[in-house]
View: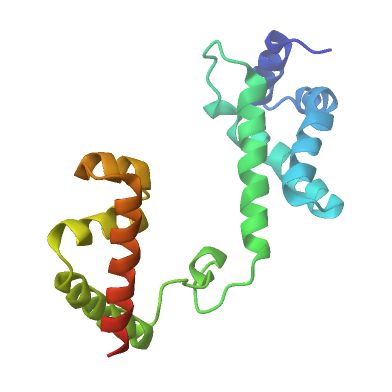
Length: 180
């Protein structure tokens, strides 16, 4: 097993353009880095291609590696993961310059549906105004805010069965109003 200090030494030698240092680094780290490529891409051929590109990048960018006391494997893993993700993104065909994330279907309602929803909302609000204030508050609290009948009865200082009656009668009035 190769130590972090040995990997850092290999990277330092790669900075000096020693090809045998790159070969040694490949031998010491390729199995782990290939596993990362394969996990991200789920395609052996692409993973092999990306792994090749990773070592080319290490050869080109070894001078940017700075010994910080952190594991040099963290740097290699980050490079590998980023390059694998880049390859995964390139896999998605571009349509009109948009990437795959911008082509996710929008779940929001369209203009017609939004107009209908707005109209219905206005009707419901008008019907809610026909209820007594405390009963309209009870309906909102239970059905929109999830408050329990018991808590609502305690807040309005009425028996639980009275609260149930308020809510049932209020819903019946709302139904009548909405069917007009």
